[in-house]
Each structure stands twice: as structure tokens, then as C-alpha cells.
Image (cartoon, rainbow, N blue to C red; front, top):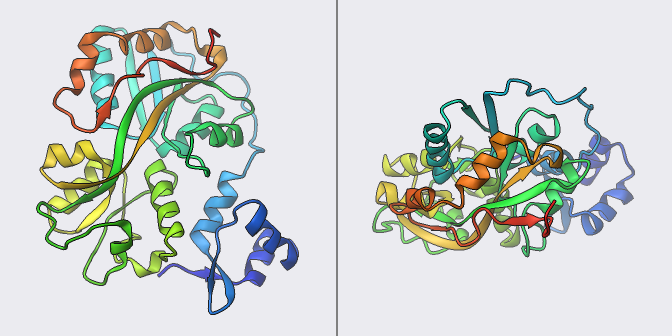
Length: 304
């Protein structure tokens, strides 16, 4: 069961006055819920809020990736990205591409530390109107270059033929439903937590909320095996595993790149690949992708 903190416990945790806690609720979106007239704070969301608002990380001395043949991408997991990495290494066998499945937030932190060339991210902003920028500002000293990789459809993966008659995220709190979840720091987990918060659904009301897996594919496999009835994920997994899918929204999945390294040969080769028809053909058997803007600059909008 998720531990709920009192206002006093949060004030002690953050070493601030209790009055400041109330101010943070309204001004900086400190996660909170009101039960029986009292403010309560899910401990895991408070810890996540602190992590998201951390700005002072130790600086690294210089860029740490100094092996020309090593190409590191870190961040959010994606099926098309996995296929793209394999395809890229066939095109450019001189590179060894390593993917760090760290979630969107983990990818941004790794980019800041100079431990990856590209960070993959799909973090929806608080206003639900854009992606990645507010988190990039929080995590990095300055905005990186942002290139769109794809748009993809996010929602709920559910058992074939929907035997539990799940219609919305609100149904996840029903006693006869067990879910499987994504890890903290992933864009999908942050998205689900925001949706639950909007509907005043508490995590401890949901069976399986604390059961976490690392990849979208793992969510689908848990449902396919019958160990879970539903879980957050992308439509392409439903197509691959013959599951049902409840669509929620299309999200922008971006590649974030330090401007200082934007014109490095390995990065430019990878971005050029996104404009080739052979690369676009990789998605033909995958559902839930839109490649209309793939390879286009999101930020800055003009040439760097």
C-alpha cells in the first residue's frame, strides 16, 4: 500500500514550515489529495516531485564519451527505436550503438552528465499542450536541440476481447482488475499518475500498481500471460501481441541532443536516416505510429 504523508511529515521531510507546504500545493503542483478534510501526500509522488525539481547536479569535467565508435542513446523505450538502432548498425557497421533503457527522465539526466549522445523522451507537460520542454529546462542547464522521432499512440493495453469490460482509467480501481505498471521516471508512468490524479484515484486502490516492468513489451507480456488485466503502454504492443487497446492520446516522441555535439558525424548520420524511405518502411508492420514529422527540428525551429 502506498504510504500517505501528513502535512507535518511533508514539512519535516522538506525542512520547511507547514504553511509553505500549502503554498507549494497551489504554486508548484506538489502532489496532494484531500481525504476527510485533510491534505495527504502519496510518499512516492512527493519523492518524484523533489527529483523532478532538482536543478543542482554535480558538473562533469568534459564530455565523457570519447570512443568514436561508441554511440549511446538513453531514455524512453520504444519498439521502432529498437528497430532503428539495429538498422543503423547495418548501415554504419563502424558504430556500436548502445541503448540505455532509463526512462525519459533518466535519459535527460544522462544527457546532462555527458554519458549519452541522444536522449529519447515523451514527457507530457503539466498543461498537456506540449512535450519535453519543461522537463528539459528543469534537468539541463539550457535547452538542447530537439528533433522529432515519431508520434505514437499511448493508452491502456488490455486482454484480448476485453473480458473485464475495462472502459477507462477509472476502471483500474475496480476490485476485480489487476494491472502491471511501468517504472518510476518513465514518461508512461508519469502520464498514468497524472491521469489517476485527475480522476482522484489513489494508487493504493489499484491492484498491481506497485508491480513495475522496464519495457512496453513487458507490460504486454504480463497481460498476455494472464498475470495482469491491463497496463499503460503504446498501441504497437497490442498489435504485436494480439491484445486489445484503449487509446488515450497521441504523444510526441523526441530525440534531445546537446547543441555542442549536434553536428557530430554519428548523430547526423542517425538523423539523416530518419528521412530515408527504407527507414520508414521499418514501421509498416507496426501499429500506432505517425512519421509525418520524423527527422524535423522541433527546437530550435531554425537552423542551429
